[in-house]
Length: 155
Image (cartoon, rainbow, N blue to C red; front, side):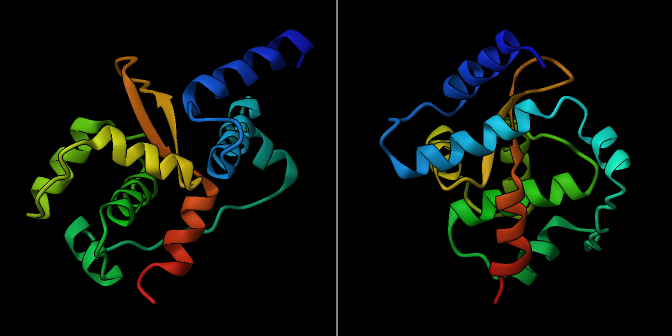
């Protein structure tokens, strides 16, 4: 990857993360976003390195998955929804899809998903991406978010 392309990815990461550079959560989110942006073909890299991603067994229903995790906060719920979507084969999730998920689990949705997602980004659990289907803004769970849902939630 040439220098200009790397600088372009750095700028894109800054725009996606926002926040103030001095904020430690912004710094964590920036590193995660940049790491993902610099991976040109993550699947090919996994195949070349011989790494195998571990299969995650999920319940058939999102509501059942969230009940197992005993989630109380919106931040944890959104990260868990993104985790569920990702491990169900959906790379990214839009706000509309988050609203539909909240409706399907019969939980009152937060008033402002953008603020909620910004908190998730600052914690390093989520990154903003462009949706592959329609080019709209979407969100994706980070490896830090996956580890958090897989190991910390539901203890």
